[in-house]
Image (tube, rainbow, N blue to C red):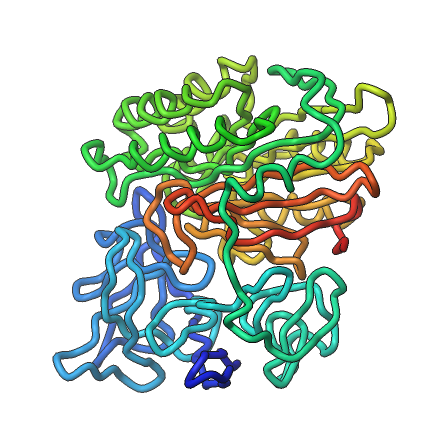
Length: 474
């Protein structure tokens, strides 16, 4: 793959490493651990999943690589690694930068990396998306040697408004827009007439916020819970004009030992911050609401059973809105009867045959819009049973978009019909800052307009539009 850098007034393609590897795992109490690394930097095939550093062999750290977290050994004193690995500066699960030996090929890696070790830097300009960001263009075949992640080739950018490729923009034209400047632009036709409560409701304009992944960097680290960050996010959502009529959250509200009661205090901190938003919020279950392991599966009769994290999630976040199961449906319809929508909250880390039957039935019901809210996105590897299980059902029915988190970043992935919102306070892994997304219906054509905000600066960092079937809209 190629990354594009702006050097001396020009966009220049530079070679990047698609770092990844196969997994060789054993299971710890929280998730997966691996065999010890060998040689300088470890064997290329050694890449076990992890939740924290203690899940890794001595000399390795748990790092965010690609769409998940994997163990990678430290580079030696000279910055060298063994065969098949490259020494790179990557983000650990604790949010720090570390020089680790990353595998050059396979599934657990950085995907793309520029010379400074960050991903996707400077590759968004209005509706234009750079080579290393997944987008809606189809000028080449995905997986082909010369095909970029955005669906173009030769360093061209994808215009998501038209799904056509074009030459790179002049970086000086890529300006940010303040929240104040965009508040009127996002309002569209109609106001916030109607109400949404714990069991859904009616609105004249579909209008909701998305927040995801709020947890401390280390297990049980209550003192460093990101209270200030998530409080500011909910305050910013409350201040939106018009205020979103409801919110959906994509999971991982805490990081605790699954068999202690540490999660109780962290859920309380999250709920305290959420009080800054006056409308209803609908939470999704994350892997940290099970054991913390990405592949974990909780619930009665499932492999990991009923952990304390799972019980506290149900009692503290779902019971107040009248939900007793970690999966559920919320219907929001037009006050005038002109459109319908359903929001399906999938618990991929609490998957069983009963949930599968529920999802199959819910997906079969015809609505103008269908949003699936699931913690793990479409490209996560070695995921829980509900990842593949729900994906198989989704493939059988039309839907608008998948809303996910898990990776601690904001990312629009038009190719997979998903938006990743995982930048709600957990240690960041990409170049996006902490923030949130607002989605709002446009009545002229029923398109849904998504606005991604940086909560630190207040800037609008990306805006894109989709039709009810999930395809790109102008």
